[in-house]
Length: 467
Ligand SMILES: Cc1ncc(COP(=O)(O)O)c(C=O)c1O
Image (tube, rainbow, N blue to C red):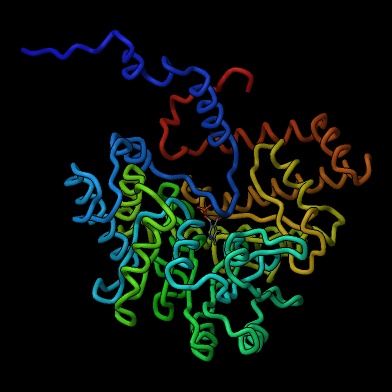
């Protein structure tokens, strides 16, 4: 029997486990695992991916360079990588129920931001005009964000951008004004999608506006792609020329992006998108990530995913209903997807304070602008999402418990503010010392640790030292 010797020379390190090779990084991972297990993840752009996705993502595929596309690579040795990328493309089309004669997909974007920029690079000329939902209205940076003093996103540096907004009373997209402004601005591309919009999109209406200006219609469904794939949201593919998404939010895969393009209308679009991803905007594809995307997309096509996506929305609505019972104002008075926006201004609190206090209680949320906010630095609300908790198999009744935790946090925040005043530094100091915060953290931990965390052996997880 042959036995291969593990080197003991300068390569010995290559065979060590992470714990042996780098206890410092190992410790950070253990601390973060405990944070995720013992806390409640309510960041709307996050989710908890599967053990299988993490295994693929951490696999030996990370070693391989494969610039180019299946069958047309700049390097040899890509026969298996070609199989992988083709499989991933097929699964991407299947997950969204798309006809391969009409739609194509590029699965190489490293992230949602690069997917968007590659799309602009492919289909626009520098300084062409784009219109996306403004950031303060719930849009994303990469849809052309700029401020009075600065062009923030590359999408506003290299293109002329003019945002559309939500109605200041209803919080809903003001399609009427958008249509009128498009008539004046004449965008080359109209972009739908956002990061903090709790309602579904009227793609038919948007397509009418785009058509009236002979503009391309692009939808960035990063937040809602899992819900779109499960057919529990309107279908952008019916009306759009291009659809981009991240793969790590409701889609529950690894961190990456996808670009879907409609090839029947424009025979050149496929070549343009592919060339924009590589070599224009990126280098070699991250094959380990593409494997993770393929695994996630197989899960998305399974009927169980439809049950998951349906529950995500039910949970969001249950949490919203309970918060409203407690008297909170939600932007648009509710949610049709996975996310909620809580307006704290009627209480005289800022989103930063709740984010801070929530962190101390083991609940993760993010401060967020609410409609009518004047200062981007002190947003008047916070954003919640139910994708991650639903991946821990929490249901409506648990959402009521979580909403009650949020309510208690808010009451504690109000009390602290009453005692120490409005300055954030004083607030932080008092919150860190608060006995109420410590009690609530213990309750949150007891609750959260009674639910398994995807991807780890929850029964054998140990509390790391210092926690
Ligand atoms: C709508 C939207 N598009 C794009 C992105 C960017 O994705 P990434 O962080 O992967 O670059 C996000 C991220 O939150 C998003 O919400």
